[in-house]
Image 1 (cartoon, rainbow, N blue to C red):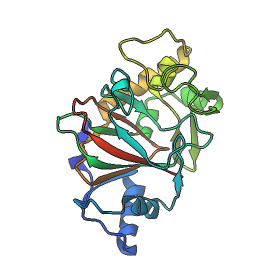
Image 2 (cartoon, helix red, strand yellow; image 1 turned 60 degrees about the horizontal axis):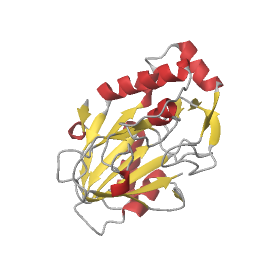
Image 3 (cartoon, rainbow, N blue to C red; image 1 turned 180 degrees about the vertical axis):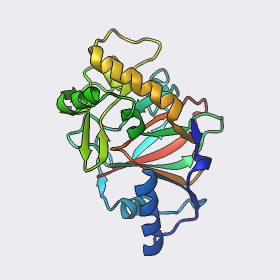
Image 4 (cartoon, rainbow, N blue to C red; image 1 turned 135 degrees about the vertical axis):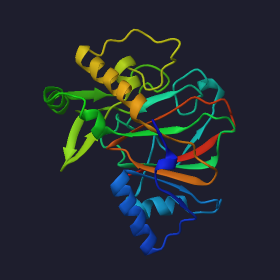
Length: 252
């Protein structure tokens, strides 16, 4: 496991053409950027749009999603709960998932937890046989929860778990969904679910790889974390501070 200290951390960014170009190169190289601005008025949405050259996408009916603790989700593996969120790429139940995600930290957790974690999926793919990768590319899989707190949140979508754009891998995968049929299950009250032996093995390999190869970022106040949702999986570890507050956007 790596920490954010090993990766670019840019102070007080602005939106000049020269610096935006620099950030674009960093995003292309590392598939994510993390910036600490120390500026409550920094236009993080404008910056994210400039760097990605993408527009905002609605996320479940909203342009900005508030990632904040909600007591009714306390026991769930959910962005608004306190239990660990297991690795996934976002919005696999969308016909076209967002290309990029961005988080803006309004208030970090006062405890040591609540870190956002990331892992580039190419390393995971290297652990699979050629036959496994071919099966992931050929199998049309339905993504759309019919159980749990996010049941029927979208109409769902059918697409292969793995595809490529030139040499770039595009992964659509959620450990919780594949293993439990639920995007945000209660880890202490898992319901019987059978994804089939092949997908179950893929999900277990994915989790094993992620646990030993992710990098962890504890976002500071007024910081921005932006990453490529097509080729980077993400998760979040547990935390206890209910005042932690992030904002999230989709870009695509």
